Image (cartoon, rainbow, N blue to C red; front, side, top):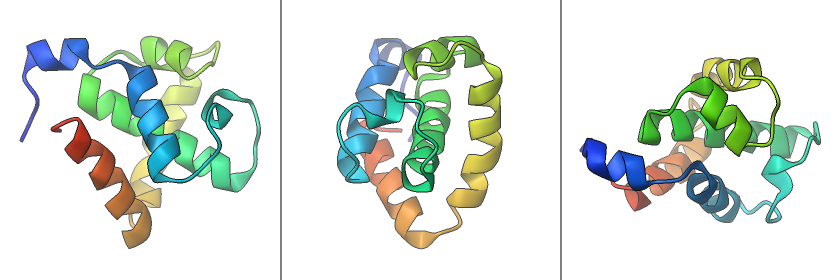
Length: 103
């Protein structure tokens, strides 16, 4: 079920990022840090991908919400996330986040 455009405009990327931190059990605020640890980076890619799919916001807007200066990082995350989502455990957690936001 796709959220309405009115609902999409009310959902903030910061809320999605915070929920991803909860679902994937990473320390709060760690997805906005510039760490390159695989465990955090993969969750960050999923969070950015979900921000794009749930809110429909532009890559520059999502990059700013995720703490990046450049939108190309968000583009790359959306390219890599579908590969990460092939893992059933990751896909289940991502689906849980989407269910919370009715996406």
